[in-house]
Image (cartoon, rainbow, N blue to C red):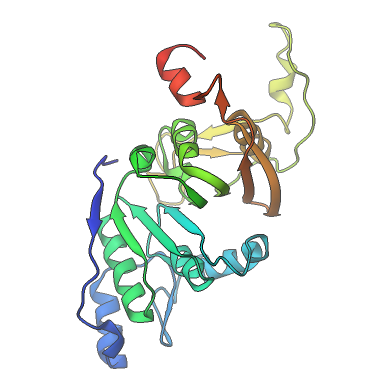
Length: 267
């Protein structure tokens, strides 16, 4: 992933004024869309294999986020075509920053925001460089990106530096979704725990899954919750099987972030 952070400037040419035929043509010209947005009655991905995605996901988690976000700041990591950024802005967020490394997605997000008359900021930036962004955010959205990363826990630990309020975390989950209490420690010779279906685990995809070679690590539900806790987060809500809403609880140790201790060899 690129470590670049580049501003994506809004284009003053008015997408709002496009006639339906021209609007549909521009949507097509921007390439394949993964987010199905409704741009004045024209869907951007009407044949999405997941259905009306991500609207179907949003409807399940929307109640876990305040309807009135007046004054809030939002960071949307891996914003894709901007669906979640736009929804947060519609709720009154003061400033929404969407970041992604894919120029196609950023172009789609810019066009969608212009077409809908929604003001969001877009930057080309890797999740691995997000901790270099200025300031912290009231809401950080980390939606559908975790399992596309070769270094997922490093990304999570780094991203926590940007969370002032809530982290909304969503990932593909496979295997068990049932969490239970585990002992603090186990003897070296206890191998049985690793045979337990509910033990926290991540599945590594060497080649491809669902025709996508960027699907690298897919956790089970217990692993997600264990990693969130290990990163110093407290889980406040679990509105649907793949989404957790968390707040920073113990992200600092001795006044420093966990990832900095790890990189310095002092964890």
